[in-house]
Image (cartoon, rainbow, N blue to C red):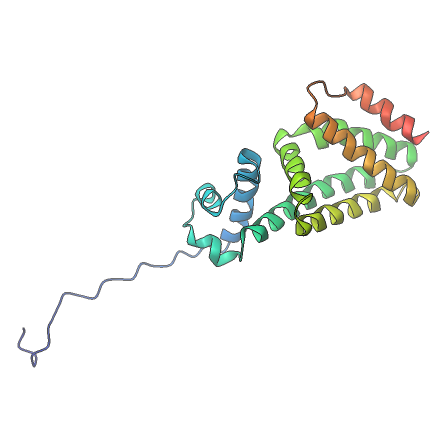
Length: 194
């Protein structure tokens, strides 16, 4: 007891830990989710693993996202939008159907198959979308955007079928122990477009 009217006096009040201002945290979490998915697959992706990869407290996950499904949808949307931008850039540079065919060949041979990380993310998205309607909406929006880019040079039916061929060539190359060579990819695309 102290001499201030019987009130217990203790040391100074503990200082509250200052909140770290981190406006980019949500974006970093989405990027970290993509890294975890590429490394561990969707099945191995957890809130804890994403927080660890982003080097943030686990509570950040529930602060920024309502569920792991929301994180997956946003991460895969980011991946799909980046891939669609590459697709769009290749096709928008083409001035005619012949150049568009060459752009498609370059897309499949180089851009879409060039990064193992991106290829794994694409396959993970396809597999997850087969079971998850929210992710199927992501793949549907991605396909629609790619077809729109193709429709600058080809009719709607050809664009849809060519998009399916591209998807098949990418999956074949991702999963095969003997993937098609760039010459075989060129032959397949040009044969389809004859």
